[in-house]
Length: 172
Image (cartoon, rainbow, N blue to C red):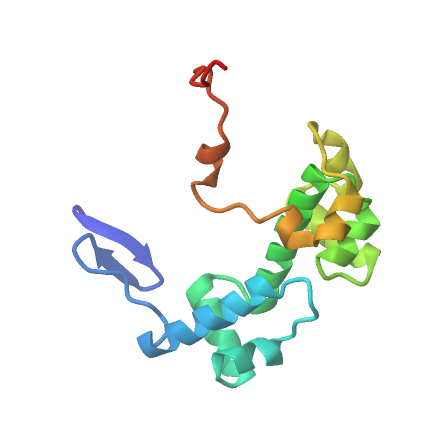
């Protein structure tokens, strides 16, 4: 069919028709609030009931709606965020894998290593060995706290730290 847009399930969307959310529009802010709670508190013990409470709906309704809107369950989202943060820590610090495991909210090194390997494709120790460059000492991370020592990447923040070859410095 020429001129038609992408097909999702049994519905074909035209290029002019906005995407219809599978979730009621008035529930979206509540889902975002729960996702924000997961983003802020990924290192703390989180469960479905706590995230559903943040959204203000039953845990089963929350589970269905979150998965329909974001394409993954709430706990898959939390796991992915924890592993993303672990990759940042393993790349930027000289912390051990065990220390990183605890900092991102895992109590079991085995569970952490298994999930990390599933999502990244290599073990945490192998990933850390492949990363080169200067690292922040672990004592500095623990002294200042995780957030202030290694802030999470913000979209577009890379440009602010990009090195240029221009010498715009003033001569004394």
